[in-house]
Length: 222
Image (cartoon, rainbow, N blue to C red; front, side, top):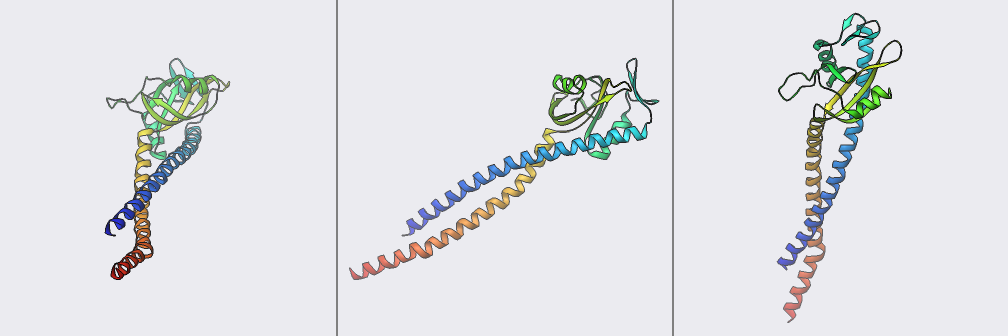
């Protein structure tokens, strides 16, 4: 009878493990989808807020003079303080583009230097500079995947002359998801084990033990 107990316990715990694995997978996929949707919404809001701050802080029109971008009388090229202040405010990485060229950015290259002089990807350029629309979604930023938002910068004639960007590294997003998933996984596994132990106790009490009593009685009669 002892072997039956172990077999029942193994079956119950195995079923609980499979159920916990399925629930964990569903939770993980849900966390990914929810995190991406919330982050995209945040980036869009941060981008419009950043543009509004620039409009208020630097009055005047956006204009191109040679290879330089100006907002009013303020030259944007190499203006690290501008993008750094936006990054501190929102927690995102920020970039100002002249055309598709990064001219002020908090994004870093592998050597740790600012990625000034690098260019946006073709998909972003097509949607923002050519079509004049906001780009929301994943994009490669200096060779690494980011969750991003890009907004066209227009001159006083309505021409798309640059872009304002906000984004977060997908690597950082995944770290946050794994942290949240790890906390939820502990809860799921702990709950599953408790339920499994309780079900096993019920089976032993109401199934195995009566069988043991019947077998014992039969043996005595024999």
